[in-house]
Length: 388
Ligand SMILES: *Cc1c(COP(=O)(O)O)cnc(C)c1O
Image (cartoon, rainbow, N blue to C red):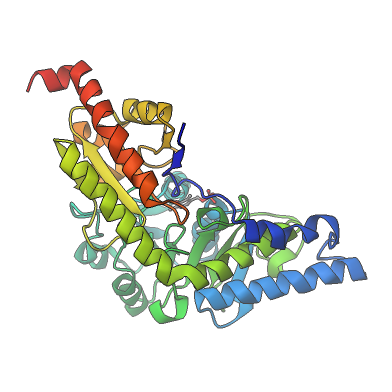
């Protein structure tokens, strides 16, 4: 059976070139990067070269602005909790959006239990953060604004430069969860004026379990992982040297293919949506028609449950998801879709197709060929549909 993977926003395969770059750091250059002997120093040099590469890729001025973490979730936790605790004496107010990934959302919720106040800025029906509401929410107690660069369920790209300007104008730090932006669209922390930025390697053909947090020079942060003085005392724990090498390689490759990736993904994504739109009745695309990452399309199939579509596509070898991998299995409609004003029933029938660099036209045509029958069959069984 043909197999088509269209769940790249959940995770991507590790590029073979990345795996090749990592391999010697398991078997040959295995020293602890903090050790003083030659084995350690070789690992240290590789880690610092990788840090330099990641910094360059993000347009950061100084490689010491990069802290390696275990991934996007840890970077988000370190950024938000780290700033909250560091600036507690200055204020207790944090601003975020209503469509954040759970790594940001639940971190904010946890801080609320500890006495912090959090404002969740609404989005419009295309998933764009309300800038006026954002401006209006800032008080003299506001210490951090955390708004994602691109949404994982919809692909919507937020007006990140405007948000950075607003934050800067008010002297508030700005963190962005850029996990779904890095590797897909150009990301430059200096150009935009970002103070903290989270990224994760496994979302752009790097390995699992490694990520980074960009922290602008001079930003006070309270470390969240206690132990040794690693990462300039901002994140304790022996460096994941192979992972760090893999992350740097993934950045290098993403930089090289960025233009082609954008063109190819847009073409395939549009081919998929056109194919669905022409062959399946009662479908809607969610998210912003233009301001979105090139690989993502979120489609609502009216009168159906997303979970049953996923299972049926899976039986045909097609892997998709209802939205965030972290919420799969829960019957709650996505908080992202409901925040966009999409009614619960439409949200329930939403499927996220997230394409990757190795997908082909044949993959897309295969999906378009199996999908209409699945939808027809499921609607035949749907009490919601029969009522129409
Ligand atoms: C995947 C994802 C994360 C979490 O990253 P991990 O490396 O899997 O912990 C955070 N934010 C967004 C937007 C994501 O898509």
